[in-house]
Length: 264
Image (cartoon, rainbow, N blue to C red):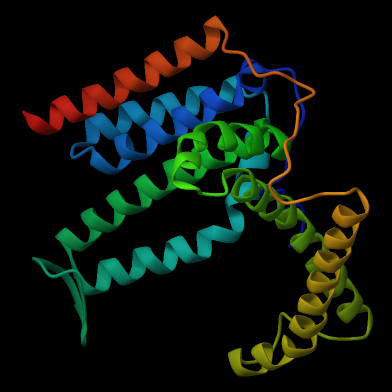
């Protein structure tokens, strides 16, 4: 739980920070199908190199990206192991009922590679874009749904609040862990059952604090006269610049190249 910056905005003056939030969202929307549709290592390498270039241009230390993804690596490794053990194919190693196949290793590595690129791209978006900018961009992208009477503004606000609560959740968890350890609780020793039982006095106050924060937020919004469906103006007007068009063109070209290679 230490030094986790998942979902937090990190201010900097990089070219990625200066991009319009709408172009960043569109680029992510183009990058996701490019990662999922590529069927050869060359295409995924191209997408990975482009993502790494964006990471370098963001002006954020690589260690911060590692810290943001560190909590998810456990889930990724579990998924990798399950795919290795349960994917049928030519057995490379057999230990009792456990069989490791060549196809399982290839498929697991391929899946882990794809998910890592997607998570890295998502981290770039949240690190370089404020929650308010994301809300404005989402509202603009979803604006055609207003004709179908979809509450676009409220939906964007909900996503904004969810993003804001991610660092709050980690801060609350970190404070509770420190409080439990100061009382002598040891979360790093004992069997799995004992460790899980020690989490019970940790989860209850965590959920209580989160619901309390949500109630305070709702009260603060009411005090500021927030009303559902009310017309609102914008202090900062979003504008596309040449760099935004260049980023959109490059991501579109990468997606087109992946689709063309898949069709051949």
